[in-house]
Length: 531
Image (cartoon, rainbow, N blue to C red; front, side, top):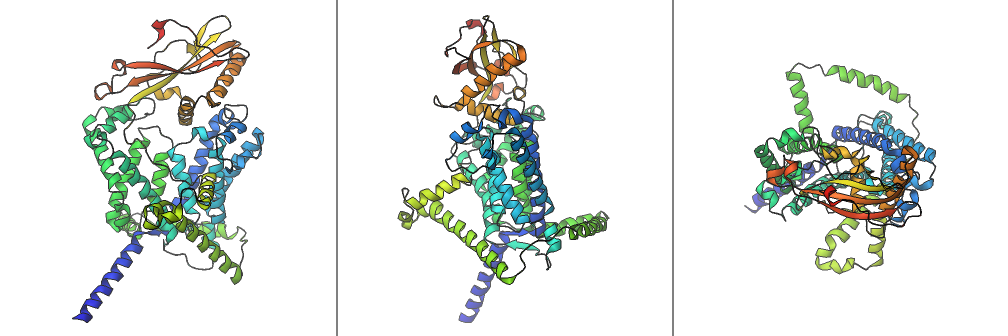
């Protein structure tokens, strides 16, 4: 009887161990698709940012290097800070794109991943006023990806490697990157749970009622409030059960991944929040396990899809890959040293996370005293490389319930009043029926949030005002004497989601500026012009 119990216990331990390993396993093919997706996102990000190159990324714009460095950590790492020459900055952007291409094809993949990470944080530090949660999640995923074999499959490295590629990866690194996604979702759900709005189904309609950040199919979706409410409730529930992304395996996991993918796709076509939806989709790709790849092949065979043609193309690409030079350390000693260095890096990161994230809540929490020098050093390093975890309060605990647009009242030297932000005669009426059109790009909205939130001691609004004073005279041959920055708010209720004209509207002056030698002062204009 005792023997049977031991056997049962041994079998149970074996099963638990097998399930735990399977839950943190990443299929090498999923890792390859993730690698390509990350490279494409980097290229897309650089190209999209280049639309505001002079305005946001040179000293001729509103965020000169000196200002970016003044508002970031003293030891902030940014390759883009080596020069203020626009040609150098543009050249660095081109290099970043080339490294992303290197990552996509999987050539010297770990080096390409490290360099991509350094360039990603460098560009974020070069203009910290236009970043969002999408950038935070992206750089964290790229950071954890450094410790994964992204080039294991479908890469030049795989062709050069003198062994068969691994089918799957289960390691501390795979646990960390999968855990990053789950932590982001669950922590966001935790914040949402602090509010009653998400539990009543009102949150999603209110979010879709924000004209200043919705686009494409948002108007059509708003016309289905009941469906939208149920969709919001489903998304809220998914945040709370997100740990199941790790607990479930195989087809069960894929069902939940599909729900998350569908949710992010819905965001991508309705809410203008940058690349967040696509970055999250990239992270979700890592949860696709071997069973799903097998099922995919079976489905293709069932529909009589020829899967040999892609294999033939891959073979031709392998011949091309063989022609690429293979420079690497081949000695056993060098390989062992590299493996030991990799292991040491992983262990250091894990111990740091445990001690300084979980440790304070344990009986031995005194080991991580808030004022301890080593803790401050670790936090300083984390800030320098932008790998600190944020609060993940996306639309939480309460979604924003005010639409916003900006009116910059400017006075000319002949007393004329203009709205120089929207390039029109002075009026506080909506500049566009769809408020998101007031911003040339989505990063301009993030920037204007930074301008509006800037404290009295910040130069952010002053730099924008000075830029407007200068460029307005150059482009319109009109001299401005003063600029007053206003934000106009519209209170959104369930009843006024589709009728902005019925909303309560108010304006707030948040900054005064004097162009040239003029002292800042509030510009007088008729009360009839106010909202």
